[in-house]
Every structure is written in structure tokens, then in C-alpha cells.
Length: 241
Length: 159
Image (cartoon, rainbow over all chains, first blue to last red; front, side, top):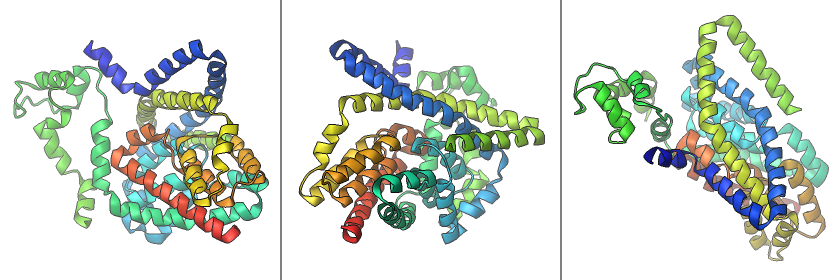
């Protein structure tokens, strides 16, 4: 029963939409078929775009050294970094949700909050192909004025975001929600396995079972906490502040 | 078209990665698999909901909402509609064109298009998964504000 609950909780949206679709099917079948048709269009686009996006993001994670990204997109990259971010977004493909994995990979590798926001926003708004479509329908004056206004405003947004949200806050939030463990064996793999008992459990195995039962979270492990504090990439940022 | 370029870039990058180191490529595939597992279901859910909403709200209704005579009200309205919906560009631009022709103000259209692409209410759960709640919420209200500023300036310059 509890397991079912967590599955429901992790897949809220899909359950909600299944429910809505089921209701719609009985109440208004024509709306049901129309929405299935719409969704199908979205899904085809998604299936084409997301796999390459995931591959590119993970290759960034594995290959590009932190130093390179920090230099190009980090806090000290200055205005040049901002412009570069606009370009990255502008030359990309796909809807805004495709921007998230790539931007996250860059963020992990040292891109600043400001530049992450700029990449996401320009990914969404600034598109060469879209520009042509827009000027086709709404006139070139409309499109070019909108772009001329949007680019500086996106850069300003980056500066404001940097003030509002700190790098550590984002890192903290995503490191807490990122991993979902399937069994206590998965948890155990991430533990030091020293059976030190500092967490209050007898052994790491007991602790892992505690994590699965929801009594503790994995970061309650004392050794892990200590290891996290001395992570070099984070430390640099703390000192800058 | 842009999808093809994307796939070419990804496979080129991937081929290079295999050539350089099998180990690291394996590692990257593992990360991809994790990304896929954690987001695919969510994105499908979002898409299904958006499809449903779009099927319920026909373009003609949106047109009715945007045709408000008070300019500022219609800017706000347009920005809000753009925020809560995801409409593919190939529908949004023709729709905007008919809106303009039927008398909607330029500023409202600009607000609509800008929030449509930049502020995603529907993609919020996905964004939160990648960047957390605080980042997402701040980015959304800032983008909303930015869209309104852009719209007002557009109204001044072109109106």
C-alpha cells in the first residue's frame, strides 16, 4: 500500500491526466479524441528531440572539465559569458523543456545562476527559424523590435536572478530530490559501508533499510555529510561569496 | 529541420566520445538513462494535460479574451494566457496574425508570444525537477514581468 502511494506521488501528473482522459472519454468523446490527437503531436516532437538532448547533456557531464565551463559561463565570465549564453540558447533546437537537462549539465559544471537563466530564456525565445516564421506572419518590424527588446531584457533578468537565488540553494534543492532509490541495496551502494554506527543504526545495512522506510534520508549518514562539505567545486564558490 | 541538426550534433559528439574512451561513453549513457527515467514520464504527463486543455479551449475563445478594448487589461490577459498554455509556434503565429487583423493591440500580441515561449506554467514540474522550486518560481515571475515590460515598450515603439 505504501509502495503504491510513493508510485502515485512520483507520477502525479500522469495519474492526473489518465484520470482526466478517462472522465473526458465518457463525458465528451469528441474532446477526448481531439486531445489524444494534440498529445500525439507533442509526443512525436518529444521523442525526436529528447534522446539527442539527453545524450548531449550527459556527454557534457562526462567530458567537459569544470574549468572550461566555469571560465566560459561562470561567475567571472562577465558580459562575454552572458552573450555566449544567449548564443547557446539561440542556436539550440527544441521547446523550453529540452533546455533544462542541458542547462543543468552546464550548471553542474560551473555555469553561474545568471547564465543558466539566460540560456534557458534565450533557448525559449530567441530562435533563428522562429524569427523567420514570426516575421512571415507578423511582419519583420514586429519580429525584429521584439527580438531587439528581448535580448537585453533576458540579460538583465540573468543579473536579477543571480541576486535572488544563490548557487548553493539550487544545488541543495536538486541534490535532495535527484535520486530515487528502488531498494535498500541501491542505498547501500552509495554508503561508505564502514558500519560506524554514528547515524544511530547498527550497520550501514540497517541504515539503508531505514532510508527505504523513510525514517532517515541518505544524507543523514555522517560520513557522507563530511565528504560533501569538503567537495572542492562547491568550496570555491563558498569562498567567493 | 532544427531537429535534424540536433540529432547530427548528438551523434557526432557521441561517435567522438566512443572513439576517445569507451569507459566514459558508458558512464555518459548511464547518466542519459537516469535522465530519461526521471523525466520522460513527467514530460508525457505534461504533454497529455496540455493537449487536453487545448482541446477544451478552442482558439476562438482565446481570440475573444484577447480582444479586450482596454490595452493594459488585454496585455495582462494575453500574458496570462501565454503563461498557462503551451501552443506550438506554428499555431501561435497564425493565431496572432488573425488577432492583429481583428483589432487586438500590438502590445498584447507581443505579451502573448513572449510569455508563451518563455514562461511555462505547464512545464513547471519539469523545471523544478532540474532546478528546484526557488529557482523555478523566481524565473517564472521575472519572465512574466519581463514579458509585460517588452509588451509595453513594443506598444510605445510600434503603437
